[in-house]
Image (cartoon, rainbow, N blue to C red; front, side, top):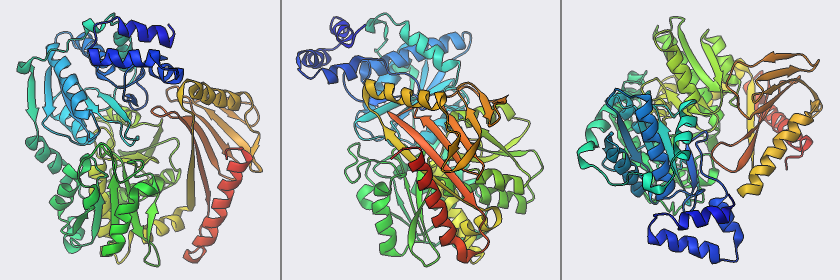
Amino acid sequence: MTPKEKAESWLSSNIDNTTKEQIRGLLASSNEDELTESFYKSLEFGTGGLRGIMGVGSNRMNKYTVGMATQGLANHLKKAFPSEEISVAVSHDSRNNSRYFAETVTNIFSANGIKVYFFEALRPTPELSFAIRHFGCKSGVMLTASHNPKEYNGYKAYWDDGAQVMPPHDQSIIDEVNAIASFDDIKFAKNEANIQMIGQEVDELYLKTIVDLGLSPESVTANHDIKIVYSSIHGTGTTMVPAALRRIGFTNVTEVAEQAEPDGDFPTVVYPNPEEAEAMKMAFAKANEIGADLAMATDPDADRVGIAIRNAVGELQLVSGNQTGVMIIHYLLTRWKESGMLTGTEFVINTIVTTDLIDRIAESFEVENSNTLTGFKHIAKLIREFEGKKKFIGGGEESYGYMIGDKVRDKDAVASCVIIAEMAAYAKSKGMSLYDTLIDIYLEHGLYKESLISITKKGMSGAEEIQQMMAALRANPPKAINGSKVKIMHDYASSLSTMSDGTTTPIDLPSSNVLQFLTEDGSKISARPSGTEPKIKFYFSVNAPLGKVEDFDKVNAELANRIEGIINDMNLR
């Protein structure tokens, strides 16, 4: 069915008049691109669920695409749990239309005879995961587009362990959605008897769980007044992060007032993404203004956190997602060891595109580190598989997401902010800073430097271009990169690793469209189309020994040059 035919089929269906008028406008417009982009495909569950630009059409976030996804999920739940009472939890972030979409989802579930625990107002994504586990729900939905621009919204679907849906459930939901013959099959009329509003009581339980993650209460007590600046970037973090920091004992927390009010227009930033220096600018400025030790900012649904710390000369500097993850894992393992809690059955997790320095740290503590595909649903899957056999300590990925403990089964910026602040207090009790801690890690394990390039290719033609780029890399893989021989190519789509001599070994991970090249000089280059955005991402990781503190700038510059050489050699600029 062509985009025009699909638009006309919507027009002839039983949808509201406002939507019909918008479709007529698209059909009458001389700009065919907008019609094509709105209808050329249907939104599908990717790495982060359903996500897209808000508007009319099958490829847009609106009442009907959200409705079909929810009806499909409801139908699948009834088949997956045929003889059990089914309940779900629903929450939303600060984005425009998030509350409306959340109410739509809640109404549809309730009309299908499913009990809904519906948050009274916006809450962070990790609190939704917590609520699913707390209430024993079979599923849950979070309305959010995470860190995407304001035009976007999204739909994260969760399963009964509090993690985002995994195969085979994701495909089964899509099959159920595709089986919906008409919008008339969507039960929009809510049943109030099946809806229970939740709020403060869950907040209290969630906050208690986070406080219980603390490992250094004496350090927090001694350094409770360290200056911390926090920004929610107009998102849900304002509801929980300051409260969590205060609850664990920090008394000198300053919120960035201009960004504290939830606002789906995100008026003070271009992208509400703490991975971007621009989004951290106001927190950075406030930290410099008051002389703060630490600045933190979370994305709109509070599952990612970016930080800035003081360097060797007292200047505030941004820290990469890899560096934050390294410090978190090192801190957790250090405190577990010092507290005598390591028994030999613990493990940590990071993803295949995250720094290998985490592997080196885990090895030094004789703790197992598992590598998995990008996305916290894969981390949660491993936790579920090892439940009752091994104890999960923590994990994360380079894109500013971290998980501490197993009570929440998705990345949790609220818990991460608490642990990062506690790390700073612990370091200060040792007469150090977080920067000193990072340098010490480099001295022990080597200086690892990472970088990332995202190439955006929008629309139907963009998706095809991305696939062509991956196909070309597979058809003609580089024999050497930046003068260093490629010794191994991991193709996670075919689940095969190919050595330089042509021999192959299987990869024991689910299939995923990722290519990874390991070179003789220790460089790691990964190519991965995004599952939630029209982008292809290239990840670079290089490393070298660091013999002494005084050599840091020199070695860091050499590694930066190596990354630039790789980028130029692969023609990625």
